[in-house]
Length: 127
Image: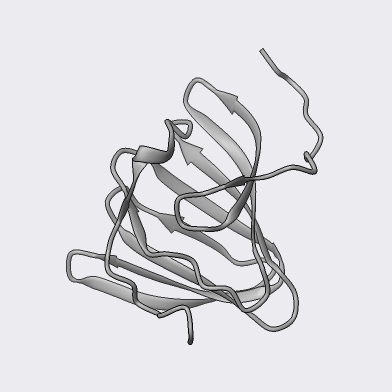
């Protein structure tokens, strides 16, 4: 079992197109470092079984979330913390000239790429 890890240089491409550097997992959750390049727009997805908490550490952007009748777009900036409930449709985009960077807790730990299901985009890649 890994108890300590430094932020790796290499990343994995998430199903939504963001760059994820997995950190550590325990039985009930995991932690990762996520980046979206400046001006990029993720693909819209929903998770089948997990939920997430994000804490923005650098850059600026926006997050769209939709679950049943609830729908909103929230601004992301350092110090902002948001949740992604299980089943919520979500998409995010970077704004400005710096990568949007956040730490994300995943509960339970990320089970694999088939966890994310593609849903209709809120923003097109050209926006």
